[in-house]
Image (cartoon, rainbow, N blue to C red; front, side, top):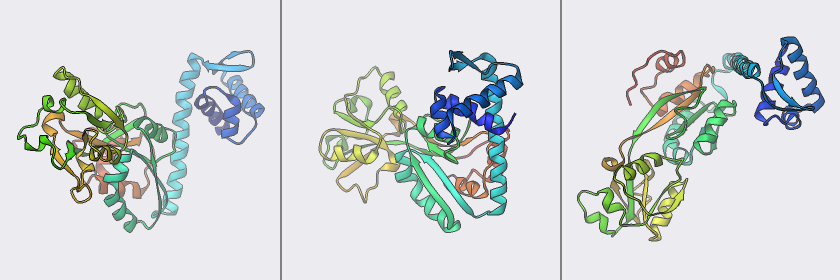
Length: 313
């Protein structure tokens, strides 16, 4: 057996059991992929895939266990490659960050400004997407690290670390009636059309739970993945906005005012996600500590080894 066979099996699953697409992705021929998989099955003495005629349809039960082992082996192989590259060039290389728009727009600029000063030879790439998309990027080795509030904590194969805490604010026009209220309530908010995040982003789940707990039905007239879009439509008078506190800047958002809403929707934690058992290059540790100063290299290593760690954010 060899690594090419392992890669063919993994890619066949990733391409929904389409060997033609798997072959295209791996820049080889479909017959070559099919032959290599059959040879691996012969050597192992079991069928990895269920077949209908010449087409593969799904994994067999032993195939599922074999895929788990293959994934683990290929992760270790990738780690070995990274070890070699890291020791050959400690302060250079490509660094891919998968994240959401809010983090890329508001949380990362100061961190990356300092990071690039320390590592001018590192080429940084920011890949934006939904929490599910960025988790997939990390799992499929298309990113070194993922940063999001929603959707990465319970993904099998990922380790999540707390980055920073934040709360929502209510964004309103500068003369909105809510500004005259001392203690804003959820009942006050449902009196107005609401503009906020799509359900997969930026603590939207906590917003929904808060209204549900009071049996209130907010009139959400617009959902967006981008806080700038939300604020733009608040400025037009379409409604009030519920956005991450980090997304409001008094200097830039001169036509808006922000009302604290932590007492309504609670605290949120933006998380750093890493692929379990992945090898981390030295500059990745530096980036993590710049993003969340309490996450030292020692703490990250302990977490990667599965040890209990007491985080302070």
